[in-house]
Length: 167
Image (cartoon, rainbow, N blue to C red; front, side):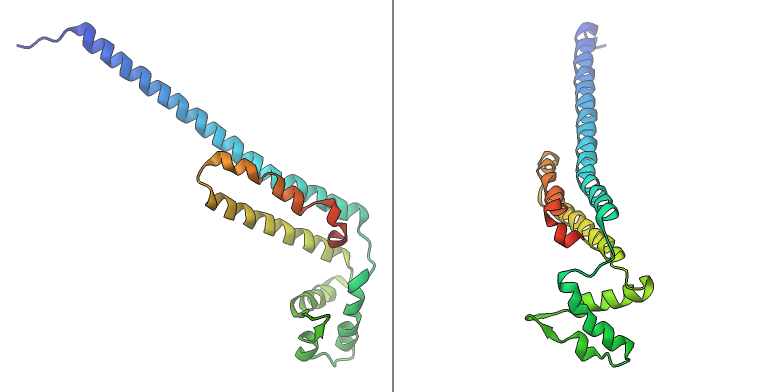
């Protein structure tokens, strides 16, 4: 019969248990760090979005501004029932405004041509842009700590310096 020294087996088992406990603690702390990083990144998107929504709420007025006056021509043609697809695809300053005019005509019929809902729509578009940038950024970097580099990007996207795009 073979006998093992109980002290050595016990000491080896104890060393293994301590190592397993350390790795479990390290895994738990890294999981907590990953959760914190994810929450911080989500807040870096949500905080500027909420600030910009508040900005539109406080300062948005129902007045056509700058390039929005160019929308009067398709609007007039819509009310005269002479609006055609060619009008929506017409060039204006070397641009084709098919999608913006279509969105403005659809939302205008719903909101009675109030420009404030369009301002909120712009904020939602910037929000979708920041979320898609975050997803692309997350896919590009495997290290979770690199996601902290994303934090300034939503603040740049929702910068109040772009007030002309927001209002």
